[in-house]
Image 1 (tube, rainbow, N blue to C red):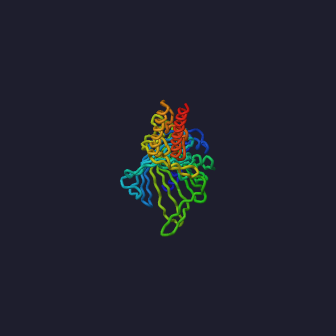
Image 2: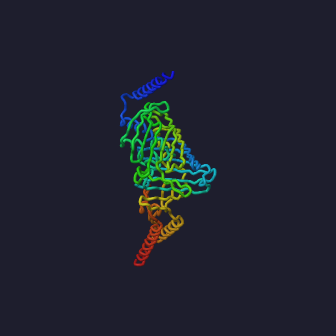
Image 3: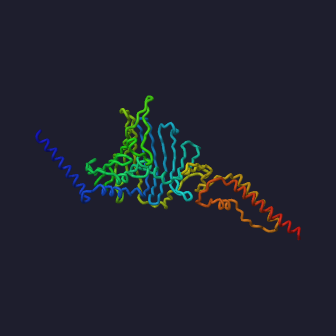
Amino acid sequence: MMGLLPLRFVWITVILCMFVNIAFSQEGEPKTVSEILRTLKNNMNWSKSVSFHIETHSYNTLTGDKREINSLVRRDDNAMRFQQFAKITAPGAHWLAPGSAISEQYIYGMLGNKSSFFAYRLAGEENTPGRIRVFRNGKERVAFKSTYDSAGGPMFLSLSSISSEKSLCDLLSSADVALSNEVLEGKACAVVAGETPFGNIKMWLSAEEGYAPLKYEVKKVPGKHLSSDGKTMFSPAPLKEDGDFFPTTHTLFTVDNIVLEKIGTYYVPVKGELLVRPEFEKGKDGGEQRTVIELSNIELEPDFEAMGAFKLEGVPDGTNVQIFEEDNRVSTDFVYRDGQVVPRINQKALAAIEDTVRVAKGQAALETGKHTTLHLEVREKSAQVLGLEKGVFFEGKIILLILFLGALIILVSGIHFFLRKRKKMTE
């Protein structure tokens, strides 16, 4: 019996190899790396126009911190539109009142003639006003935000900690990639691995399911690989323990336990787990961050117009707005009103000016004996003069200009009255 044992292993190996070869031959001839990556990228097109709900549950084994985020996400990459409604709870967190939550909305769109990223945040405490932040580097912001765990980034092969602009598929497409075959969880997989400027990437792709990912991992080494912005080197904070500092040797990002579901012609990752584990010098244990991600109510190529997507919802008029320019200037003299960002106006001063204008118009009408129409509607005229037409962005204060217009109106009325009176005297 002992002599037959090695022979059995040989037969088992032969059968497994036949299984892998049959699985890989279902698509025709054996795939090259470029063909596999192209097929993978085509399968990932499901994420270009989609609406879905997503739940993420995160736990840090070192600190014990927990965080849960429930979101509605809408993506329209064809028109560069993005939207996320998020509700954040963190049981036991010191920075959030017990039983409360933070509500956030994110919109990518236009403000005037510039692409902008809108972030509306409403704190969990009662009677705490929300705020809107508008970032002028809109494309950069939305590219980064859409790769967050809570926005489904790991399910799109995009991780905010790896690259904020390129997916893992895009990174491998320009790398020297090795190809091998393995069986993972009973499924034949093409295993692609390569080193990129953002880290060493390895992916297990299901040959029977459009080469959709069943597992992947990225290893980033400080001083060797780029940070997610692609401009600086990856440099995570060291571990501090008893007054000593232990630098990071590398950080391993792993997404596994991926569940695929066929929707239409696509194999969509609907569930997975993201594990982030830093390794430190001298073998110090820095713990790990594990996040369970689950998608539901997935709708491919939805009618965004019918659902009224890509608009801020439930934002009260008068909500304060901060505008962050690309040169780091911050403008705070704006509020949200009637679905638009408008300059903050002192309503009492405006009312006083309008009263003055009405008095001047009445005096002019009495002196001339006619109902003179001066067409001096202050709100409309000042908006046109200052370039504040619908959808147009204006920076600066307008109160002084409104006061100037009011004074000008009074001056014109006075001159008109004086000329009329002088004319009567000469007659």
